[in-house]
Amino acid sequence: MTAVTEETRPEGLVAPRPPVRRARSRTYSATVRALGPLALLTLWWASSATGLLTPDVLASPAQVVDAVGELWGNGQLPDALATSLTRSGLGLVIGLTAGLALGITTGFTRLGDELLDSSLQTLRTIPFLSLVPLFMVWFGINETAKILLIAVATTFPMYVSTAGGVRNTDRKLVEAMRSFGLGRLAVVRQVVLPGALPSLLAGLRLSMTLSVIALIAAEEINATEGIGYLMSQAQSYARTDILAVCILVYGLLGLTADVLVRGLERILMPWRTAGPGGTT
Image 1: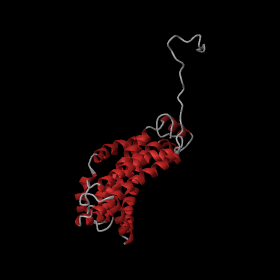
Image 2: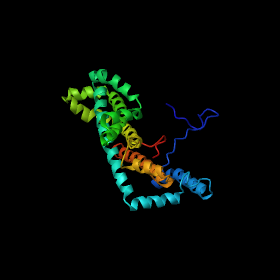
Image 3: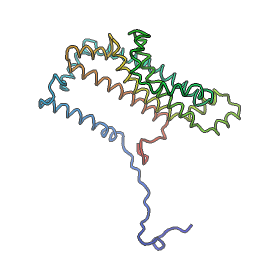
Image 4: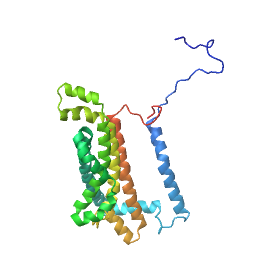
């Protein structure tokens, strides 16, 4: 093929320019990400300082900081945080395990798909919040109902992501590994799961986020300890500062879960980029 030169280039056309990828430093990326929360905090502070937000509507940032010191000093916040994290963690582990096992079964075997997928897809459409009264009848108001509610909420995102990732595994590669004598478990462990890793991490991310949402609902089941219990007590005494602390704690739990999964993605899949153009 003849190279295009200044003499041979048709009139009106310009030479193509290759895209230039500009690497962004982590400091710059972190600064940009912090702009949104800082803007909200500034707006909150300004509204409280000017009287647009009164303490009976929402406490000021300074009052919330004082409430954190009060709750941390008397031990209520550490105890509540430990209880809530235990509930969320146990429910999440159960949900991830169930979703992973069911996803592999339906995605890798035709019999499992025919037997289970339609039932699981039907159950997936049921809002987990609607199960709260039923779980209270079945398990009472103890920890079992709370943990199982979180487990149910986190099972189906992991199931859908796992089943989709397993189904998209290269079948030719699977057949090739079987021809070398690998059994089903070895194929799943060495071929299917590594190939489905992006989908698995996406399911993990959704499940961890939902575990926090389900935790909020679970702690409404007559909780006597945990962040939800602190919220109900603060509501009784109209303590908007403590209510704000609890809401911020829930938000930080969700943010921490998301950051952990992002870090796991960087470790397990370092070749992936954060967006178009290859910039991270």
